Image 1 (cartoon, rainbow, N blue to C red):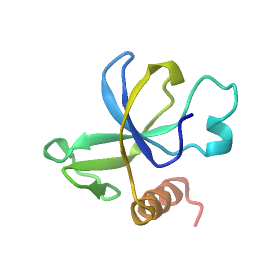
Image 2: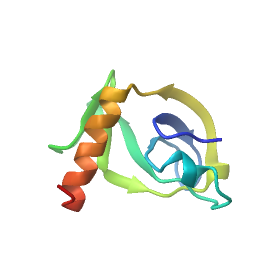
Image 3: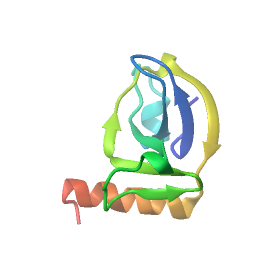
Length: 98
């Protein structure tokens, strides 16, 4: 099962990395998609005040997608709780949830 906080290699329309941000309850359902924030190489970072550093990569909370679960091919990392707090804060800012 996909879990919130995991970084997966996703193949589909295009290959990319995605941090799972949908909840474990949601991910455990029969719904065929998961919600992810794109993870890009630090060198590909465009101007984004909400980007969250992750080693040589950057999590982009303003680049969300909902790929099919069957496209998730490999779990390549799991972020720590501090990183997830930063991502959650950025998502709240985007949605004006305070």
